[in-house]
Length: 362
Image 1 (cartoon, rainbow, N blue to C red):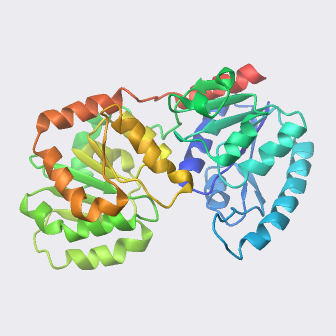
Image 2: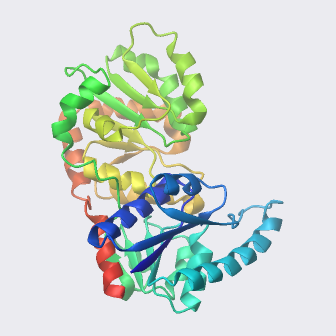
């Protein structure tokens, strides 16, 4: 069996793609897998590091405002479409899977016109323009949220959830290791703050402006700043002696961070939310406003509607984020309620369910 998996651009697309690839090879270790990504995007590094071959396309994103970058969009798209045709002819895939990102659009578009069955993995609660267009000829569409028949044909949809890392189950047994790993006091409450690998400016600034209050309340804080904000966060912490706040540019053992946390503050990317559902802790979401169709807000609202998370708008975070956290920590029963409700939404076997759909197509 031969499968092409296409997409990337962010960890939210790449990690689910790799999870699907591993699940396919666990089902049949003779399965040949080829990734197709976009030049100069992070999949060109992450996919080979995971042991898979990847081919790059010159395709870029289309800017939704007036920009000189759009002058290069159409020539690069035409070159990418021609290259996609060559890739499919040479590899002869049985199925092409699109996980979102720049490269998935042209590759699935060409595959559909070459009569290769295509499967779309739509991660968000709000379908983007590219997937809406591709859905017309897609054979199957795997989704993570209810009511996706607003965007796609009901007959093509299967609710599988989003694939996530496989080390998030049974976190309770990891608590002793997590406390030791982060040098935490088991008698104090721990807040985990994450904003993605690059960082989230609003979350970082909201925390920095309100550190006095968190330290005064004797919370332990695991603060992942991301690449862009690490140095400024370290400088901020220098003025606090004997505090219980630790700053990390990036956390490699997210399973231990989740295990240690009593409360979590996070962005609302689709992959992140799928992980948080499995983790089952009380969460405050601060959706990024800088994404297509404001889909992070829609992702967050899908949890808020089920009383499974608290949402603070990005433009209100400086004033409200830490105060909402303190409200939450002041009611143990409310924290338990949120944790129970979000865990009800978990789909821990999403990668296997998607593989089931691949086999049905074949």
